[in-house]
Image 1: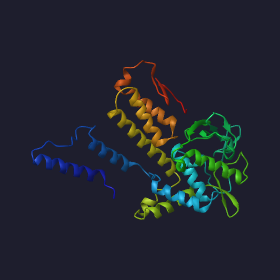
Image 2: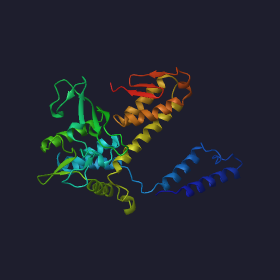
Image 3: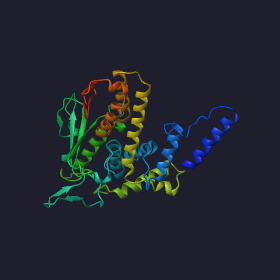
Length: 335
């Protein structure tokens, strides 16, 4: 059940009236915009006004998808969709960055000089790095005594026009089932097993002996099927909120949860360097290899607003084993 903003406001006003009738001060100050209850009402109102919003993939859905992937085989549609969902929940991928519109046809971007550029990731766009900072050409042939450290992806065509952007994502050693790096390794291995050219789209699967490309429509239909199975109480309208874009929405939700933990750490944690270390720990625990670039940008704005940091040097603020943050400039150390 979802309560509308007007209903929540009436409930809170009733609580205020009850306190006032008993001679106690009203617990909620509607004139204070920073009051948590007022913020709650404002957020609910804003949520109601968002048109055609999509629902994120729930943890229960991920568990069910991983079960399907194991039962259907490593090259199945279910396995491919699960792997790209695990990668996308951290990278915040749009379906246009890895999927196609048709199962047998790739999409290309045509430049003014008539050069064709594949919109989706291909094998050349992904690089795996081991713990000695050496490139791993084949994830199935990791050198003895080494382990995976992080991988990078190059976005050739993006909606925000940041074409050619490269981002890095750490391997999660404690939770290997949901690690985006392990999922990317499975994607690369599947692409190799199906004998696809290195210049072709990575998001492929095997259907009755034939190789197909993942499509946004097929992914959305699968999400609806999984949601209906694990959440039988959902209405048809609520099920319609699941689509291929739910992958990107899931990443936004994870990022929001991480930032909430970060604010909590700064508000109640101890001052000084230990605060940032606690904050970094929360980020790594909840997102491991998530959207580092966006997160660092948001973190920089948050850090600069803290009183403790304003007292530091106007150039170099502070350094930890994981971060180096400066005025207007940030860099992230993946070591």
